[in-house]
Image (cartoon, rainbow, N blue to C red):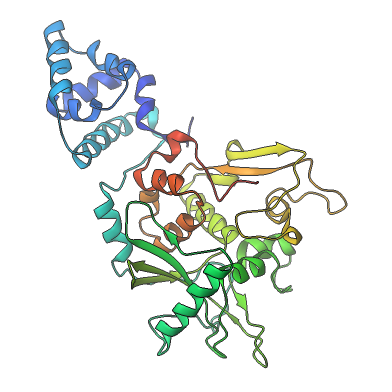
Amino acid sequence: MGGKVFTFSDIFFAKDDVIARIIKAMPQEEIAMALRRESTEIRKRFYKNLPSLDDSQNLKEEIKVNDAELPERIKAKEKMLAIIAEHPEYKNYRFQSRFLSFEEFTGYLTKKSKPEKPYGFAAEDTPSSSFFGSQNGEQALEEIKKKNKAEEHESFRIPNTKIYLINYSVCPKCGKIYSFKALSHHYLNPKPDPTFKKGKEAQLRQDARMFCTGAGCKIHFLPSLLVVDDIIPKNEVQFLGPMHTLNAIEDYFEALGYAVLTRDVNNLLKSDGVTTRVFRDLDEDARHGFATAVFNPPSTSPPSKILKGIRNDVFLKELESRPTLINNLLQYSVKPEIALNLIQGVNVEKNDAIFGKWR
């Protein structure tokens, strides 16, 4: 499992000397916090490595009565993982930290962060669509919300929060407004650009610009994604298509030495003989677009196996320095329960398929 994610449940497979190191380094109360909601099998690994039967019994009793809140339990678990990470045997593993609560996560989303460099291809003079930099931002946002609703693509609400993610896609030159559906169609069928020498597959992954078709306009611009707390816009990041989000996350981890998402072939979920639509928002003419970009099958025949989904192997906390990627990843998680798992940090253990499923 070198280079892979080490989740808390993997403690079950840790060697006895590693468990003994944890027992020596952590107070019994913290060990009990970490094990409070864990399986009997994992607890037994600790019982058998304690110095005496009395110590084992004491830990059992402490686990029964320990009523620590979730943030404290998460901190105790992370302390255990940090101890394991110091062991030479696990030097090639990735150990995650998690957001401690939804309050912490909500605060992270709404806190103004340092602007990131644009993701994907963009020239220096490519303008951006910005709600906070527009005099008519509120009016345009209301029109965008109406368009999205009429096309059955209402704003994505992050579970257990009052946070909505809403595309703000207004041409900075002519003011033409684009819906979520219009953006999605464009990103799977972008205006061909000879800049991308490897063809459409490379452009699908890298070209995050929207092309304005307004009368007399014809410019490229970068749309925005608004973080709205209840009804008040709080923050703004770059809007990315699913392929751009996928590519940017993979690039980020590749620079750290890890292959994640589609670049780890173990994460690809395939289905035989299925012909269907991609993601939640595309028409029949966009079928196979995502599979084509990932697998690059011959153009003369449809792929024999097409992508059903992508098993996730990253935690949001790992992307804390990239709020753009966190927000865009959430909006493409499609199902509320999957978004919830992403936030809670259990998505890796549950093998959630993100970026939608083929249906």
